[in-house]
Image (cartoon, rainbow, N blue to C red; front, side, top):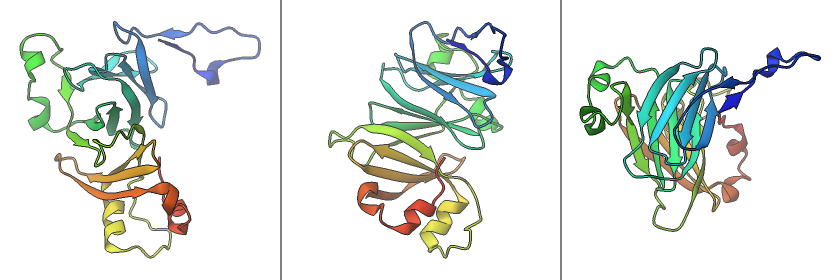
Length: 213
């Protein structure tokens, strides 16, 4: 893939695009983090996700999503760039730790690493969950991380919403107007907090006061 930093574009200058040899097959999904310093890519095979430094083009991380080819629907960084979420046509969401300082995870080798089919630096998903409506012909089309904030902006929140604000949280949005809201922690635990239709819930003022990124 090729990209250009638009901040470097001058009125009468022509820039040479930066080239990254991301995958052997065609690139299917891209995602930039909030500071545009990291670029995540996934191919049309959907088995390996890679993260590159946009300044140096260096391969920073490599993740194994799975062994079977899939169609990637969405790739998203968390606002803090600590996590990367990947959704596919398997109706599953994989969450990878981009900034992983936990040796209990980094020292574990997968089968592909042991037989030499994947590099030593490739990591598996820290968290994996499936949509609650995965068997109902519903397609997962978008992922959105909630901002991790202890500030409620003066809004009176119930116990469940206060828990969401204190935790990592992600919304998996589907093409039928429904969404699943999951909270998760770095130790791999997660919980389905909501399973609702946002088209029906959109009249609720609190819906528009929540901060999704």
